[in-house]
Image (tube, rainbow, N blue to C red; front, side, top):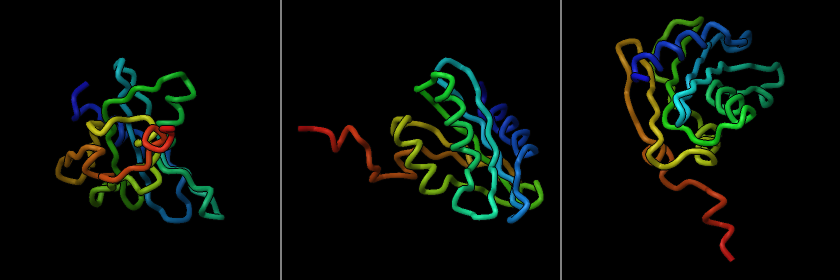
Length: 136
């Protein structure tokens, strides 16, 4: 799977966004280690805190189906579905990625003129991981 194809799938996922409050549609496409791709979109709620981001939607769908190894995710978003800038994953999404992904997990942040690449280690340098805290 090329980064460009993963980015295209993220753009497609934006169309499924439920974002009546902010108007910002976000899409994500998650690449599993076996080549399977899961897409997700943001789903807003009037109470705001129950809102879920596109990245977590994709990851949770994949985990539900039994996947636990991921290599990359593409994320894009913008007002009314028009990509207006890069949408890096929020802190909660980064922490969820830290639960399932290694430091070398790649994040493609799609913008109006292409994409920027970062690793999870770059976006979450001091992650909280169970493995570091469960040692006796």
